[in-house]
Image 1 (cartoon, rainbow, N blue to C red):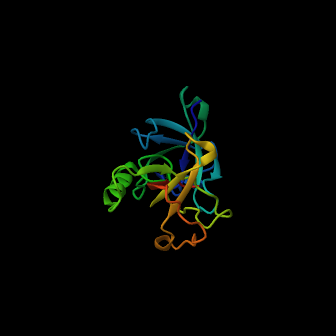
Image 2 (cartoon, helix red, strand yellow; image 1 turned 120 degrees about the horizontal axis):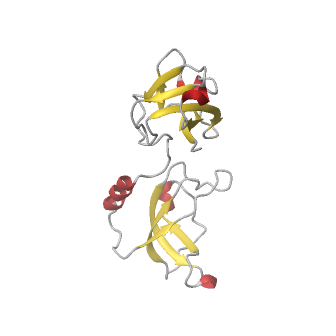
Image 3 (cartoon, rainbow, N blue to C red; image 1 turned 90 degrees about the vertical axis):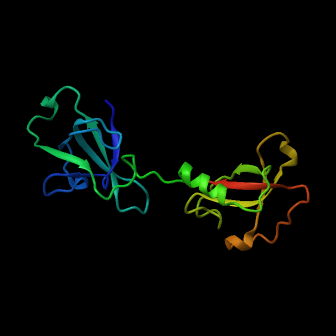
Length: 186
């Protein structure tokens, strides 16, 4: 079987019950490929939380591959992409899109072309004040760690005043190189 998790807001079904509220083992029919899901019949499975503080959830969909005998006795409800769903996928994927990254990098001014691009680790919100709520780009300087020469370990230094951070206790080493820090979501 090829189960797929679908955000409860991604699909709308004909009838009085919303996609997210359908009972388990309900059957939906997609008339055409939708959000990467093949056209055809799907059995609706369990509901689960998508993200910790997100009121929406995910439904497990299983394609009906051996005919509707698998779902005997269940009414078939037509389904389609919800009109307000903007993601091209059946789930809302968080992060920065490539076009957003290109635009952000093109908008950087005063950064030399040979600046190093560093993928900075995301931190959990309980660990540090620098935990990203969204993926973001910062400009600063990077100093490779002396005990890990040739690796990707080191320290990043950013302009804390422009980001509301208090990093005054870390002086920037003179040998640090210009860098652009890409920080993913946690």
